[in-house]
Image (tube, rainbow, N blue to C red):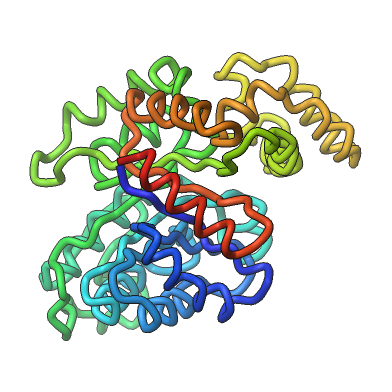
Length: 346
């Protein structure tokens, strides 16, 4: 099982990247860099590539709407080059609030666009002359659009790898099925190992039935807060506001993927009430209703024995990369947490 970590640079990006060397020595395998509507992730991943030697680097995630498919491919190839083949392209649809509100792009057909983006990226990395006729992307532009001067082009540089790993963030049934078919890795959010087979098993099986064997086994990436000790249970509370934000505030009624997931986990009444309160501006009341059972099952927070049992449950459910957020109060404590979880995960 690989050990990953989402980069948290609340205390300063350059300082955090300097600390990555210690995590690397402690056994961290991969670092994920988010991109929402703050600084772009690409410039930061290039900086990380220059400051690390072994660590894998992944976007977690780049939205499919904010860059053209070929720019995503060029960016991935460039990051793979400066990192000597250590880059993973994490893709996702984000959500309509960010895509339409911040980027001014219609949030349409996330499933179909994701498939076409992946297919175009792989054409670019193989250095084929890019010609693509899809429902959402046509390259070059067809006659009657633009100047008519577009021509099929191939990437000038020779990529380090002709197939850069692609990870897709997905939680909906159809998205997960497509991810299992097309991508090297799958990154769900709010992963509960005991419920994973019930919620996603059929979708994963259907996608894997159409999967190209050359892609290898699907890398399943689960996220979890990490704290180990006899007096750390109170740290579960740090996950409560974020869970409420996603379940209650990430979208409108009927258009919230995370609320739908909570319902599929069996928390229908709680999800409905959390959303009502959150959209009404009552964020603290909404957070208070997030079930403790849900927080506990998605985290690695407790005694070492408890964490070992949870890691075993994650492995049994099919998780192959554990993406943790170490919750130590000092850098030294967080490094020790990475060392411990590395030993536990084997």
